[in-house]
Image (cartoon, rainbow, N blue to C red; front, side, top):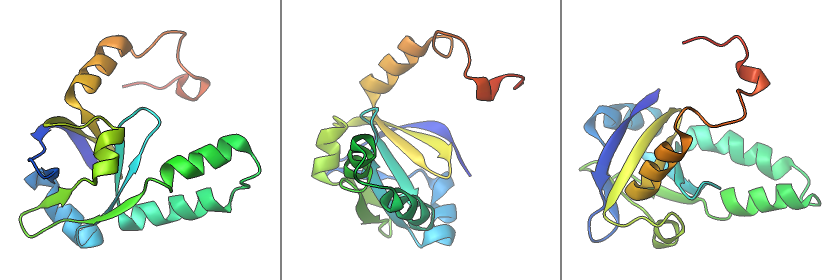
Amino acid sequence: MFRGVAQLNLDSKGRLAVPARYRDALLMRCSGHLVVTADSDRCLLIYPLPDWEPIEQKLMALSSFNAQIRELQRRLVGYAEDVQMDATGRILVPPALRHFAQLEKNVVLVGQGSRFELWNKDNWEQLLDKAGGFGTGGLPPELEGFSL
């Protein structure tokens, strides 16, 4: 289970040092084999390979005759890249994905349960400022009665 927010830096080659608190879990879960892909919010999603594979299978089993499904397949599967954590716990974020998410030096890694989101630091801060009180228009029906 990945949770928490970490402010990190990409090095000049586009490598990201995975925080030490996640490394052992990633080595045990997937031997450091991850999949990085694009998200519609202009961030990147990072999955351990075993968690990504069923998502990809379900997505590709949907009909590509529907334009919205086809767009989602293009985005998630088309951008998906396999990456391997190196001996020092770093991953190389592919150039096309860095460009897509506008990643430069300062980035934010956000744990989201079975995956991570990787954000441009400025975009992350703008998202938080914009969200303020968890958005406008009330809560979705799935959250009715939910309590923290």
